[in-house]
Length: 182
Image (cartoon, rainbow, N blue to C red; front, top):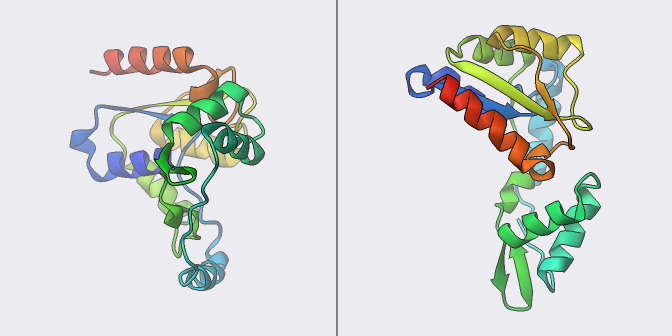
């Protein structure tokens, strides 16, 4: 999600972005226009539902929950996420994310709009991905890469959250890219 936001910002404010690295992201996908009405209906159905946060007895219990939802996370990555993504509350810890982010979105860009956003980006873009995460070999991703003038993404050992699996290597690639495009 963060990569999609960064790409949209780079398109909207090209003078403010010198270079951009995304991790496994080339924009959001709302699907075909025929999905628009159903997506809006599901969004409206979700609106009245309360945004609840669960309390976990410990950081380790929160890490276990992370692993349940993300089986590609190593134990150390899940524990890291739990340590830095929770806050103490009476009875344990709660995640700090906004629970409203789990609700469905009412609107999204279709593919033509995603391509227009990517085409408006003026800075150099680097895409990193985990070797066992997303792939960029299909025609859709190749078209998106062409719009930003980016070579094939750089594969780094890890999963979808490769920054947790190989943080030093990810940091090295980002630092090198930022220095080259300063």
